[in-house]
Image (cartoon, rainbow, N blue to C red; front, side, top):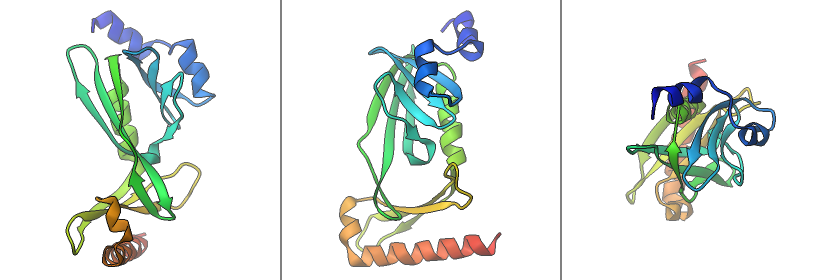
Length: 178
């Protein structure tokens, strides 16, 4: 990407369609998609414009960036609540960008800022469970959730008991440190 184009991306205004899709939230960065449109980071989350729904930062499980000569690819894995306090990884969505600008750095920072604590624990029959505390906009308290490595472990009573016990320990230790 040329220096002039990089400066325009960093200090210029986002395209009108991006601003309108942001709906009043601050546009932090955007990247041009190869198939048309943009991938946009706003103060509220990540959104494909024009057709995508907003994915709030606290529901981004993974956002993996792979750079290429010109642009690169974002592979975004959303988290979906399957029951209170239990999340599953949703299907990965790939966004091929011809011009990413500051988007990779902004996405990384926003996802990292949403995670307060994260700890993986092994399960008795193999696999593991990830305990995550996240900041959720508009909530004073941190939101704890569990994400099993394998969806089938959610139905295993032993795995659920380990997850429940480890989550209780994590929440108790967090309360003691305040």
